Length: 271
Image (tube, rainbow, N blue to C red; front, side, top):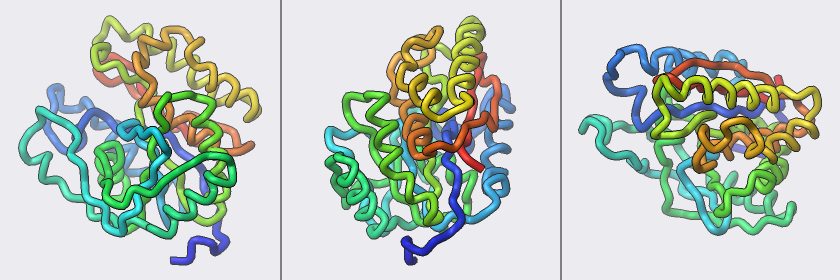
């Protein structure tokens, strides 16, 4: 694969990855994750072109120094607990791309970020669980990018901005997290707070210009019920990377559902 060949510029995405291996197990009620599963399955058609590679930022990997998976055949990390035994046997043998990993290191260095390749690290469930639904053939090369410890929102917007050029090379940049992520707050009584935060977040993402959007996202803690929605911001920061990589392309909400009493949304930047 020649990743420098010019191709259609792809959008950037922020997708929900659900809870653990949720799309591959039984739930009560049985339709808890049904809408999200169906939406993820339709995602390739909505993109309209098969990406040449994916760069995925998951809320489940943080590193002191920005890190990138460098294996040509990354293993899977079953980094969830208490789920049915068969969910620890799920397979997703998508290849990695050492060449793309090195390119990312160079792009980040040019933007002033120190980054490193991790040759052993595999894909966590924030990567392989949603992508097993969206791209079940597991044939598109994937590189996972870590969050940077400290979890500063503006920093992650800048990280995304450094990767923007990959989009014109056929690389799909995907932030994988949850727009609402309070593990103790998935209940009906949290519904109004989740709705209000989601309304603010959607308004910020859909701002009429990119500078306003990024300013608002960098200040997300000022949103109503911000810390109710995200006691810790690890699952929100993949959105910041996707927004930064969008450049001047505007955002839109492309999915929303109420899951266990909480509003959860997905966003797209660019066409």
